[in-house]
Image (cartoon, rainbow, N blue to C red; front, top):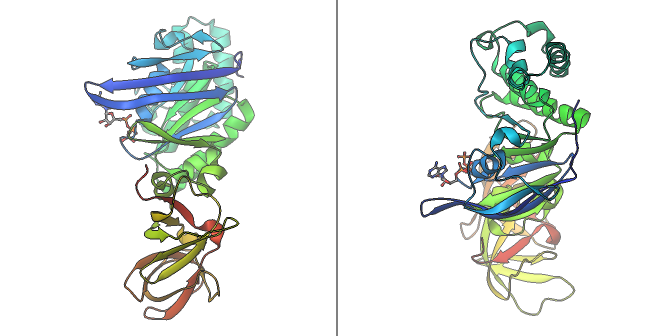
Length: 357
Ligand code: ATP
């Protein structure tokens, strides 16, 4: 149902300051037609600012935005032809589902039969046929968010912008709506820019992630790329590399094998080093990448301190002989106080300069 006329949406050095504080600094990004891009980062990193700049709700302090070479950041929101979905749904309480969804088309003075046809199609698409004549207060949170999504897509926008659309829903609904958004994107192929602080949500939905921190882009890449090879220790930390260990990178590494040492921990790492040099470094390891087994390589002797049952596996805290705490996720059932051994594959040991970000 979408009219997709453009090839690319291009953000060039987009920046926004509030007084002296820079909320978004120099965001450059080209988004292809049909692409699903997630802007991801912790609270205050500038994601909503970026989305609002795109929507035209916030003027830029520097930079520009182009749709196929046509400058659009100077246009008011209604002339950008973008659909918006907000966290709080922003539905009209006195209008029915059908009227809420048709509102934008009515404003645009679309002929009545066409409104009816398009609204019915949108209602079917978000599976709300049984609720079309109800008011928002008669709907669940998930159903209200479906109305908000239908209202955004019924105008056949060039791009859909979504700002944390699932954060007001409980965990189960959030999962359901995530699948729903994925299905709609697959069926309609609408270019989507999606803001979230939830890395799992971003990983499961997006074709590409843009990780922001303090208003600056840290990494742009496919979900797998960002998850497996975070570019710096901030992204690693944010993507769940919970073990951040100060170590010493020793000289004399060869064939992409490097030795690291810390009080009582000796590791070999290979692969991405992102500018780390001999001397003090920060090592990042995901709890899931640590295996409970004795190995001749990368062996860490430890004692089990705490165990939390997590359903499909256990979140375990162990301590090395020197008292260093390491976080592990494992399906293996351990006992508190048990002495055990961990190992990690050299390619899953990420090494960063001591202070990068
Ligand atoms: P959240 O997930 O909490 O919504 P965010 O990543 O979307 O965070 P933004 O809302 O874009 O972050 O805010 C980025 C920075 O800009 C923050 O430091 C915020 O305090 C600041 N900021 C945002 N809006 C304004 C405003 N209207 N006036 C002043 N500062 C603002």
